[in-house]
View 1 (spheres, rainbow, N blue to C red):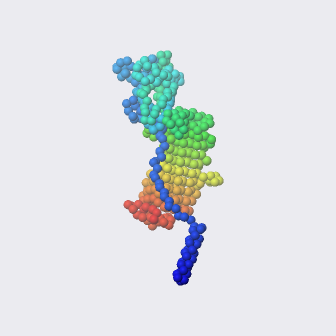
View 2: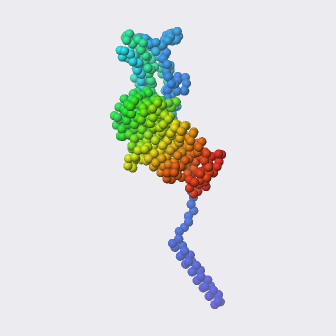
View 3: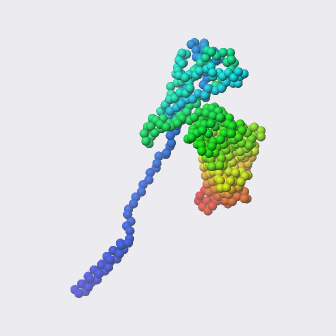
Length: 494
């Protein structure tokens, strides 16, 4: 019995020690709780689209031109030749206003009545012709005076059919014989309407303003110079600019609307403020053209901001008309549009200071998300002080040299897109740094030429024509490999 009691005491003592140790282990320790996580995909985020169009009376297609016919009481009269005479009434074919976006809009149509061709007495046909908006072909329907007319359309809606009636006054005398009126133009401007419920209510869009319709270069400059708030301008005619400047404190959206802007003296557009360039025309035919030697079609000045959403920027190709088509010394972004330079000498786009010193720490920054650049013989040059980021689009040199030249202190990062030289090598790198993370590069003599004075060239992606695996591997950092695939050298991460 004595031995058993001793054994029991010993066991209890050991258990007490074990419990004490357990308690000691628990003190200062943490519990590991059960956990769970879950994630889900998010639907795409898509912004609304505000788009208005002029379409035919019986068609959903954009209508380019409205033709006048004689407002007549008989079929025979309707077939007569259109020669305006005092008392005559003339009617365009029918047209409708269409909401081709997915937001409710309010629209305003402005009629730019054109100009009479030069004549000895300076008699203007507009002095003896009145225009009206009508909704029927009734010869006696005079409708309303056609200064401007407005309407509202919900998404996907179209308006009733409209006609424009012109009436030549009976007091038109012999001074108005044999004159020609250079047409009339209808420009439809639209903005958001107070119909749909927004994040606040259905009156959130009350203060949305129409674009301003502009018909001349002088009018364009005056509106921009006098603007006290961001201004949205739509061109109603082809115009010629005369030292057109967007001042540093102005914010301008310029819709080319299928029209052409040319220059008479200095750069066609010199932006020193904030410019957004668009083209809402159905055929995307809006153009900015430099017609004068030593001038750019679009020059973005120091500290200026320019965003290009659409439009074609080019030179007129006349002998001796040479200079860079687009110059950037500020911050510039291409989200679309075209740049064409075929003068046989100049670069299509220059980002930074070409052969001239960089002023202090000034930097020229350009981002390309989408573009269609075509050049001969020189493409894009990223110069001193230039920083380029290319995410998409195409830079193409059809004759001559590089699609892209990164030079001097230029820094270039290429994440995607295409760079092409039809006759030489796609890319020349002689700048401070170039990093290629993706894209397709083609040229009959190669895709990448690294100048001996280039400082830092890194390749982490992309497909390269007419290069060797060994050459491309020289510029791949650790963890990246060049391989041959379908005739192209492809660089990818291991």
